[in-house]
Image (tube, rainbow, N blue to C red):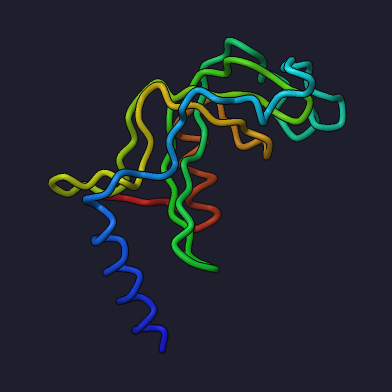
Length: 143
């Protein structure tokens, strides 16, 4: 049964490579703001992050793809912290990260300039630190 699920996942993945991704950053971050303002991270949520994290810092984050209930793969991405709100920091990638390379298919990864709100605290000073965490969690994607 597991083999059938894996085969189905692989077929669905390759079938989707020719289509446009539904997950795009259209610049609409309104759902992340409180009353239209980014605000300041709360003291409680600040504890999730290392002390050195602040707006303007360049560091590394984890790009993680969940391929199933217990299957996750990840890769470190260089980023810059560009904003903060009450529960996290807005991050912008400074490099392209492609976790799967195939002609015409780059759906697993993130492009330079894409943004997201980091609320879990998974930010690291060096790429080596980020890789070590991915290895520890058994999520490191190596190609």
